[in-house]
Image (cartoon, rainbow, N blue to C red; front, top):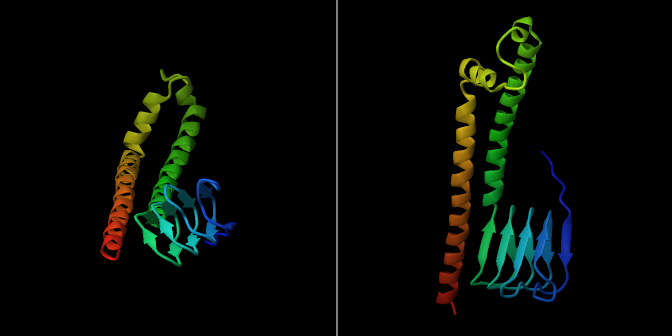
Length: 174
């Protein structure tokens, strides 16, 4: 798969005057990122100068040419989670399409019309389909929910861990 992302080139520093940067693509900052500022990119972040007490979140890489001081940096972790969850959602989507096709077949059959199940209340029919024909569907959904919950915790932990390392590293080289 090939993706082409737009690039935002920010001339100067990211500070209160310029505001935070949130961009769908790559971000290149020709200056520094000052205290309290946030830079988020769905691609890579390149900072030509220092990053000081700021937050940088990128789905791709974070590259700086100068020092990073007391900052929170998160790179790549969200993208791994997004890809994994995307694959799981494709399986769930495929199962729902299969269920929809089975429901259409049943609704159009003559036995359905004479049955006690009304077209306004398909829940018993859906439960029966899941129980008899789609036994893996509840487990797919459960795995997706568990992974999305644990993935969010993992991403938060990795961001915290990176930030702690940078703070420790910077304090030893002051």
